[in-house]
Image (cartoon, rainbow, N blue to C red; front, side, top):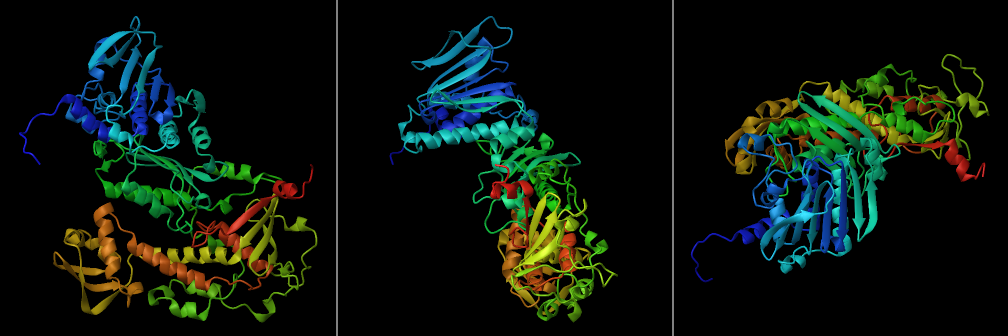
Length: 636
């Protein structure tokens, strides 16, 4: 390479370099211009996109506008009205603040800006003609109109990296939807090649969410609104049953700004990990509001990443808030009445602020002893020593049934048991009429009437019927009970190692060993730092005795370093308890009596997360009378 002297770059080249960071595709242009419109207080925004945004992008708003004498400054690099000092930068609440967008866009397109501010006699337009900015009168309406044509005409190499016009258009539309979700009081009109593509009228926040994200409507999501000190989290989280195969419905906003943050993504994912099936992705629209001094938005050129002053506290709070919202089961909601539409019941439930259901409510249940079947001997022997005392009540509850209580098998694989009333051994058999089996208002899952193929429980509700996967449901009930037993202990029992185990670690993680000593001890570990690359493990949690936990420690330290928190041991513990619950739960083809089936239903109604089993599969389904009428074309 030929040696050249150091020299200043031309302003145009500087702007084009900046455009490579800020304006990497048409959707980036739309984002920057929409942020300016919202910062100007617009209540109606019209977006026109031709040729996927490559031919033309025109954004028109009814905001406060730009005075004539400030138009040339508006298209100058690093000129802005939003900040004037470092203090304002550190507490910025506007969406834009760098003053780079207009100059960068203008350097790679044929650009014009027309503005008609309140109090000015007429509108004026600024455009670039032959390399010079020209200002002249314009017939524009009140507000500001930015017209960007022939994007990247001056940098044709960048066009090679763009996708098809259709792909680029829908990328632009996604940007509009993200902005519209955060600003329901604004009306949005989107035109594609001259035809109206989308319209989002001014509406309530919930109406806006369900109009843009239809899969989250009809009871497929739950509202969340929590506040602690100076932080507030509100929005909607999708139910685990509505999880998707890709993460295209995940929207997180910090002080109204859409962000893609690794810390937040990790917090949300870990909140769902106990209820998601396989590699599914949850849906959510969440807004985190906190003092602007507690978050740095000046991290990424596109402003899509942020840095929190207290990342650990934010992570923990977001995770725990979402967990608490997801914990209550839909089965705790009373039936609203005979003939009620389940969609309406679920919608009413979705509108109720989330509250955590007591995980110990099952203890006061009227379930008969011996419900749900016996605990296998191998599961008993697998229980850890420190668990046996805590789980003694549960093991007793699942003791083998007396021979006299064994269910009567039916040849059709549908077991309909006699209706037994405690204390009345000579009660009449279960009647043929289902009317007597209708659930009360406190029995959301209804009253059991039969067992189907030794796998499913069939129950009646006033508005239809419920089908329960008995193994999956019992598995979740046991799993939550086991977790509660462990959580009631202040510290986890540990086992001393006769010979300390030396574990190699990454030198950058060494500080996490000393900083987290109180956490290690609480979780049953006793560690000491030998060098920057080696630690000595002198005691481990009893549940990990005999296992290779060196990789577990590495992952734990990595999580502490990256996110400020670590849930590796909790995840490992939960996996072990889930396995124990799975092997302990009642098996398929185990015939249950009606009292046993109803006891399981009542326990589900008072157990957190009972809508899914430990593996994220649904445990029950409701079929309304209206649905069944449609199956048989009744009334048509």
